[in-house]
Amino acid sequence: MPKKIRLGILGGGGDSLIGILHRVASQINDNYEIVGAVFSPEHQESIDFAHEIDIPTNRIYKDFDMLIEEELKLPEDKRIQVCSVQTPNFLHFPMAKKLLDNGFHVICEKPMTMNYEEAKVLADAHEKSGKVFALTHTYTGYPMVRQMREMIKAGALGKIHKVDARYYQGWINTIIHDKEKRSSVWRLDPTKAGISSCMGDIGVHAFNLVEFTTGLKIKSLLCDFNYLYEDNQMDVDGTVLIRMDNHVKGVIRSSQVATGEENGLAIAIYGEKGAFRWEQERPNFLYKLSDTEPLQVYKPGHAYNSELSLSGTKLPPGHPEGIFDSMANIYLGAAKAIRGEKYNSGEFPTMKDGVHGMNFIESTVASHKKGNVWIDLD
Ligand SMILES: NC(=O)c1ccc[n+]([C@@H]2O[C@H](COP(=O)([O-])OP(=O)(O)OC[C@H]3O[C@@H](n4cnc5c(N)ncnc54)[C@H](O)[C@@H]3O)[C@@H](O)[C@H]2O)c1
Image 1 (cartoon, rainbow, N blue to C red):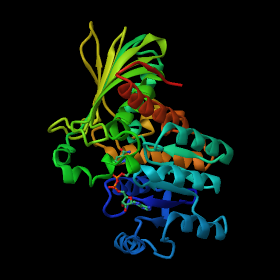
Image 2 (cartoon, rainbow, N blue to C red; image 1 turned 135 degrees about the vertical axis):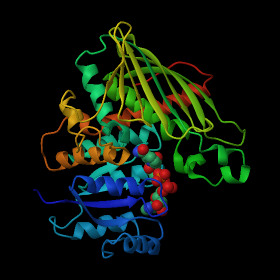
Image 3 (cartoon, helix red, strand yellow; image 1 turned 120 degrees about the vertical axis):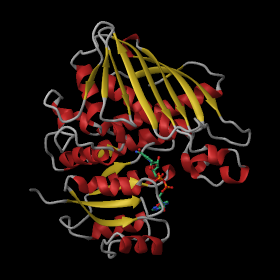
Image 4 (cartoon, rainbow, N blue to C red; image 1 turned 45 degrees about the horizontal axis):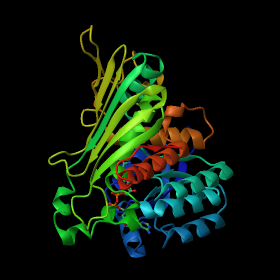
């Protein structure tokens, strides 16, 4: 067994939504050891949290500049090798860039940056660094999403006709209708979230799933947003018509005001020979539809699945694995890349996905603001 990879964490403190997912995921396959962190902008809070989760506090730094400065003083075989960036969006770019510039590998939350320009600058820094950059589009780690990708690649659907992806949540309903509350949430503050709330936060996952599973790129789009209130600068709902390679057309629907919806990410891909349908809230069922044959249901862990899908399951069929395992699969892929081992390109989303994701988000905003016009992506 190779030595554990020394992992640093930025953000993801005790008050965060996503920190627990990253921490658990990083431990699931026994590849990482958390050795340093800045869990919070308040140093004492970071230290208290380190005590709470029982990790040594000697490398809990005041801020990320200090983390880099102090870690660089350590011998290479003690130093953090990879940092996982789990802060609100506005810190992804400065943190990831400085980490890459100083020779650290990076695992980064989405949306990758605040805008497309930053994404391109980060891509340059990444190329110069030669380091691993993994973007945590969590849902690509699900075995049945991977299975869909591999079967589509092998021609199971024939020529694809139509793609329909949606990501519906309702949580912002409890905030958006109250003027006071809506000014207190970072996801509705453009200085912290970036140019988009709904499309940047969740629509981009649907975008990524569409490209990940079909292997096709979105070429142009037309978007219609809803902001609900005039003083709200950030979209909370949006519908995007898309045109992809090979004349494939489709739609990406995204909402934070879809009342009662929890984490309703779903994708359907229709082709000349059949279709796939998958839903995040029931991730272990992949439906294959046909006009001429009975409905088929694929499930994880069976030998009929692809190597990429099977590499994402740890237990025999019938033992449900979920979101922690899905994120763990991304950490596993990143670990292989960091160690210089062979890995499948479907094992983790990369800088390229992040750059195209920011191109997508910025284009949705431009399309809406210009009066719902078609915009070409790069
Ligand atoms: N991949 C996914 O499925 C997924 C799901 C949820 C959130 N996210 C992304 O994860 C990121 C964090 O989201 P969240 O919901 O956990 O946010 P959150 O507001 O719940 O938590 C943010 C954490 O970052 C810490 N933080 C803030 N400023 C910091 C600084 N200067 N230095 C160090 N730590 C700092 C806060 O103390 C907090 O612990 C966002 O970019 C979001 O888009 C991704």
